[in-house]
Image 1 (tube, rainbow, N blue to C red):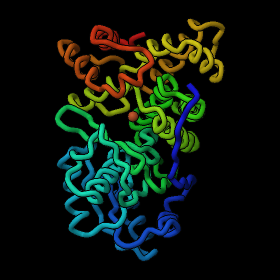
Image 2: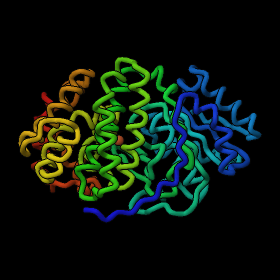
Image 3: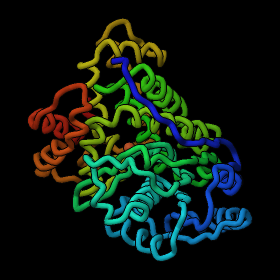
Length: 385
Ligand SMILES: [Fe+2]
């Protein structure tokens, strides 16, 4: 339980208006030449951030090329589009501005444009440990943690596949709470639950260690305390979520995720559910099973969170109730049915979940097809506990 390895190569700059330091920070770590600003189609432009970041980088002497074609849940084709441009221009480093999809796209474009071939050549279980062109990440959502993680996710057909390796960790993460000011409440809710899920999956995990626990517990504590206020638009609470989400990223960097993510991927790839919502819909019954497998740790977590914890049953139900209650208050829909998923698909959904071997291996409770079918049935019209 207590052996661990850890590498945290990211310089983190956290604070209001820290976006203004992007040029200075890039210069400080010695970045040179041509930069690709990787972002989505609308928010970066409409908010004025695109022009602002571009001028800041240009004032620092960088040539800036904008790639604003990032799509949610990027596919191989989306990544190749960026790779072709990066190769044609001769890009030296990347600045990603956006949610997990923008940051993941920048990481993958960097991998393929630095190392050659297609991004498909680098799918896990291959580990990317060769140096790649640096990525500077500026998150504008509060959940993925991608700004500090060694992962990027690409969608192929109805599968979410992973590119992994310490080379993918951004060199600089600029965490400016101001970028969250206009994030809609439902996206605060979904991405915030994603961060909470990262904390819970890193804590209840076969790879958990004394160090990953620190980050995992901090992510869980901070998200539970601030998510509701953040959804109401309180800036200080959004700022704390950005911090909580970073901690979730640190935690899963060490442990990987478990079957909450493993079960959620197909719901996103097949039915288009936002990543955080997919996790939220199936979170509670899988968490319940995992807490049974690590009951002492459940008691410890409940007591750290200040929840009733006089025995395992009490601790487990107080954790589940605390999470369910927050999900109710921030308007997370209940059940797969409300998300438009046909009941006859449940067998297929469970089979797809079983294909995420890495997540299964990390999961404290061993899960087979029958158990997964039960999990998905239990969340068809309820939160499943
Ligand atoms: Fe996630």
